[in-house]
Length: 172
Image (cartoon, rainbow, N blue to C red; front, side, top):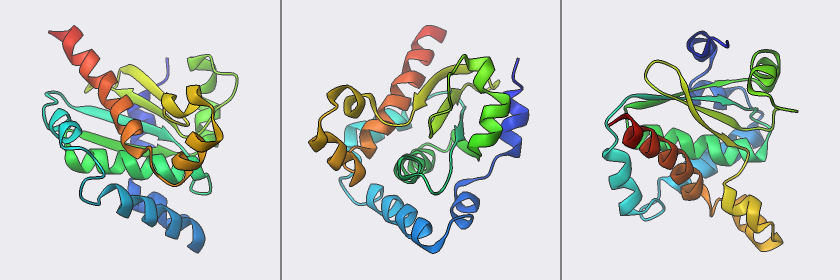
């Protein structure tokens, strides 16, 4: 079994992750971080759902700063942690994820970002892979263009939030 807690401890926090990038990568990351924080970007209903979370959770993210999907979604998940301090995140490299997670999770490859949603005891309760499902299942070029502009960051947050809410309902 993968020691998620140990792996989480080796990960970087958002600011440290951003510092590893080239200037253009840091700029892109900052753009998405600023965008999700704009008033109205995250709906009031989603913010209320986030603040209603009862437990403590961890997001173990496999990602790389050069990856556009990581730039978008890691920025979104950092904001999720800001809105709900009972959730924290740590980012490990794709290579580390391939070495420690790929076989355990039964994955053919590590698509990034790979976000493992862990409970307070670092047990796996769900995963988010690469893009929000609405963008993946729609598959249209328009949806992909909007996603790449950052128009689906709330969808990414809502997917992780739904996993946590489902876990909390089952725990009751």
